[in-house]
Length: 232
Image 1 (cartoon, one colour):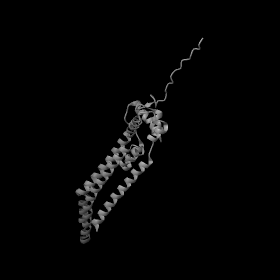
Image 2 (cartoon, one colour):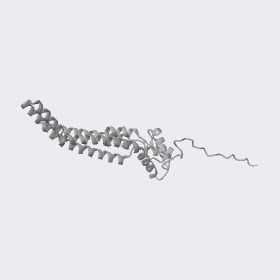
Image 3 (cartoon, helix red, strand yellow):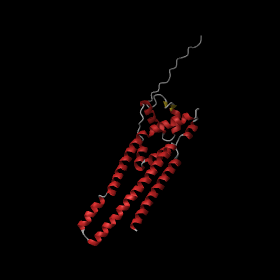
Image 4 (spheres, one colour):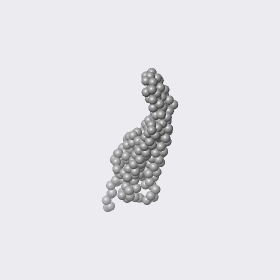
């Protein structure tokens, strides 16, 4: 008589992070190979979003970088994760914004510096302390200084808002990007192919950082030369 084969039950997945073993239709194993570095931190967050169908999962690196460097900080992270298109767009927007704010600040501060030295020159001639206080109060309450102060406050508020939004949605964007990239090949990929398609790029992030500091240095030089031109 043929031996009766024992019925084998399918293994039950008891891991709460990977309830379906897929993320955006991609196996956890393939997604892990694609993410590469720090996958032990990122994949569980991908899985939680998949399980809860939420689009948010906080990414501290993006939050901190955006808080410190504005949109450029977020660009650094996206470039590092090889999301080149989004990284370049954010980098260009940030650099253009820096150029615009620099021009505005230079224009506003040139008038302020000129008026400031006029006040000092008048005080030197009159030695009138009361008049000096009134002139300084009027100077620091001028439209230019109010505008510069308002812009500074708005920039700080915008930076905080962008930091929070970037921290909340960066991993969702990365999860969608990873799944789309893997599916675009239209065939099974080896672990090495997945890693090479994804992974990280310190070189791309380094290029973004160099560009950021080059533009920042150029902005400082423009402001310094403009102020010196007023003084001289």
